[in-house]
Image (cartoon, rainbow, N blue to C red; front, top):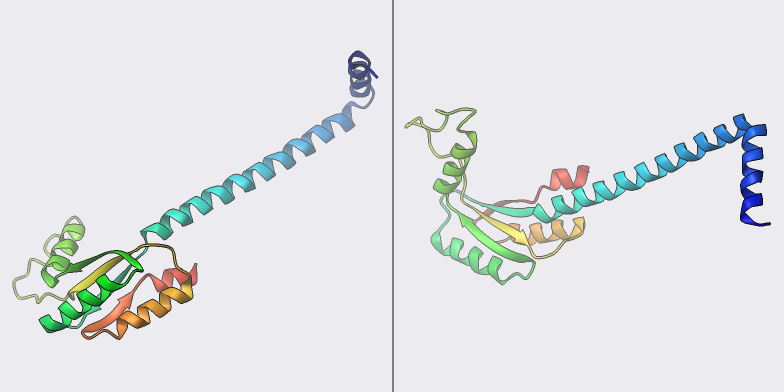
Length: 163
């Protein structure tokens, strides 16, 4: 069968079975549209989750009035851990200033009250060197929680466990 006879056969089929040909065309178009949409959605969601995963960090909040030697001890312990690519210390005053800056447009005078004590704890913010499984994050948080002066460790566990 050559090319010209194939074209004649297709034309004849379209003339004699126009309804069936249109229905087939519509079904195939819809099928390919659904498949391509699902693949695109999956790829985009994977990309979004990957970028969110890279921005996850762990925060260790210190007890109020923690001794300088305990802060130094926690600093040394966190810097020695290979799980983190960076560790930064945030003082109570820096935490208050950051909060004030972020909330300035919502509640301008909230923290300007002279009688208001600084409610923010000093903390360490750690950026991960790699991605971790959920169980590994919980174990790492428990390990950091045991360091002297650390009151609480947060890594977005509610978000991670729920989603």
